[in-house]
Image (tube, rainbow over the protein chains, first blue to last red):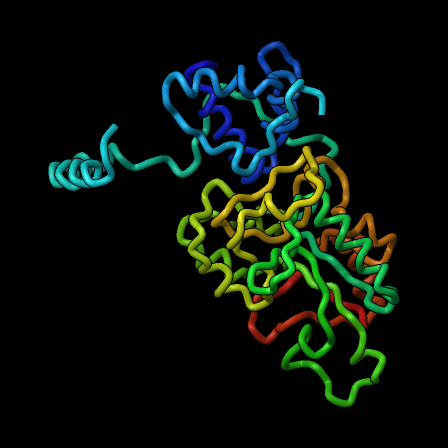
Length: 77
Length: 256
């Protein structure tokens, strides 16, 4: 996930917008909504720790949060 | 980190050597081994369409409720300057809604009536034809959808759309949103946006926000299904569409 998360995010974007497929079934059978804002960031709710720390270290600047709304600090909206 | 100039140089020389193929990017980046499914509750339709009963929209409040429901849910910025404004659903008068087909001697009541306008989700959409990056495309169920990640902001679609349904983000949209809906993204500076027929709700089995907020004044359904409610409404009423002479086959019908 550390290396490949951008690929899964991009493919999710295509599944959701292009094909209207919005239900991800994980290998353990659990189902998730295909959504960065509503699924990933619900649990990984601390953007500073979860996103920025690595991105700053490797100096990549993804533009996810130009559009997607980041969770409020503390996790709970 | 290589500069843009260096990258272009490398690309130019390697294409001379026939390595160009290695640089092409897959249009759809599918990660194999994933199981992504359609929701079982999703509304099923072959061609979504909408009928707006303009007789039932009487007061300003009727319009406001519908427009607010959409704009609030989709984080549409409120920009007053008409040069920069963003709108997914809006109103206009008879003459400007149906130019070319507007009857001069029609009743005063209709002349002064307001009409609810939105993207027509045309059967033959010019915006899709002109988009150079396939950011805007037609879903199999007829929704004219756009992929904000691909939009390069060239504005061709705005020139192509005869209905003025598309707006470019000239200003940073987040500065003009009063209250954010955390369930939906905003847009960014330099992309074009429009109504998406609430495809995210259709995929979950819900009706579009405007249909829900209109309380029966807007009918939504599958126009290819002869037994659908929308077909019943269309067969019982006289409807007009906007600028049919252009051949775009708009999917939004107006009961006059």
